[in-house]
Length: 64
Image (cartoon, rainbow, N blue to C red):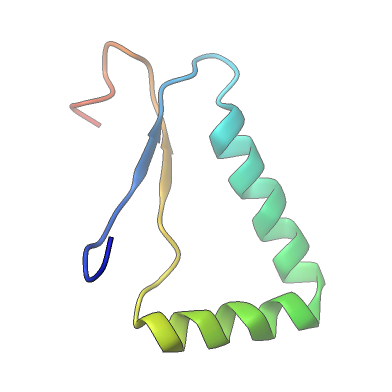
């Protein structure tokens, strides 16, 4: 989605598998300098930060 800011609302309660995957990915990035450099390059190239992932429930997803 060019030029748009996006977010992901993970309504897969109680597993929140997308949210957990994002957290695992960020832990790997924090521990790996090569991935840190790639993330900085990508953010600079796209002029965007990483998209947020929000944990929610199906009933509350739109409000969150």
